[in-house]
Image 1: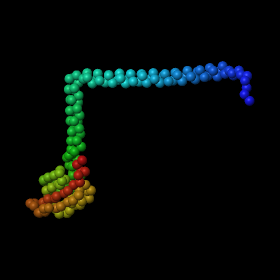
Image 2: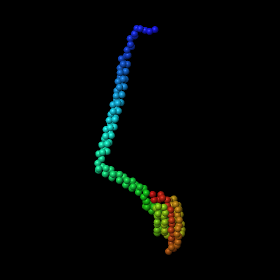
Image 3: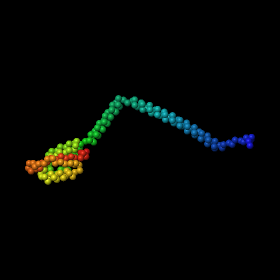
Image 4: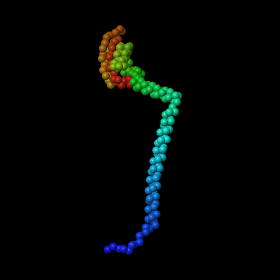
Length: 174
């Protein structure tokens, strides 16, 4: 059955109308804020780019020369650091060697080859027993890799002359 009599349209309560208008207004404000903020971000990017271009163009000859000088010093510092790390500290070697020497052994000649850590020694001592004690002291040291007694003779005044070839660990001088 079809009704012919129109019914009056139901009115929305006023609080629902206010809430609807408020929601639509908030939606339009949010959309407008998005586009406005996007515009300001783009403007800021353009200004920043212009400022960077101006700063790059403003470099004077003095600044360029100063910058080159700083880079030159930087290279020198790197080279100096390399030299210090690879430096041979002879003071460490002599301190190490002094601790290992027997009191009755005198070394008259020493030749140290830094490239292969080979130490050649010539010296003299009072007797063979003292020489054997000196060799034992050297053999107990972990930084000495090998010892070779290359020459042995009885010299003047009954002293024992000898020559040693010693190969040292590379950590002894670093």
